[in-house]
Image 1 (cartoon, rainbow, N blue to C red):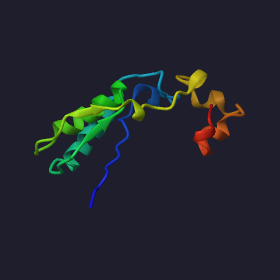
Image 2 (image 1 turned 135 degrees about the vertical axis):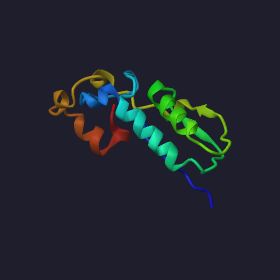
Image 3 (image 1 turned 90 degrees about the vertical axis):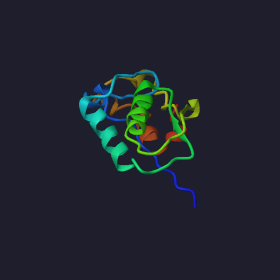
Image 4 (image 1 turned 30 degrees about the horizontal axis):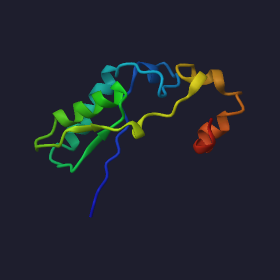
Length: 117
């Protein structure tokens, strides 16, 4: 049986500041974000993967690299896949979460992401 492991990128400076962190904004992982990725890597250290895929965003690449660095088995190279990139949040990207709570599009973002534009 095929197993899939989905891992979100580690905490970033933008996440910590409670700001939207979409496809236009990229900030580095915090120390906590790096530590979390390393912890995931240690947990999966003996798991061999058929493929490893990551968004082209540096925060996702760094997270994947930190996870793979903990592996005790040979792993395939990390494949960058543009289809895994984050949602383009447009004017919201980098803005405080509280600044858009009255925007009519907020319901689409939280509950109907495919309708978000």
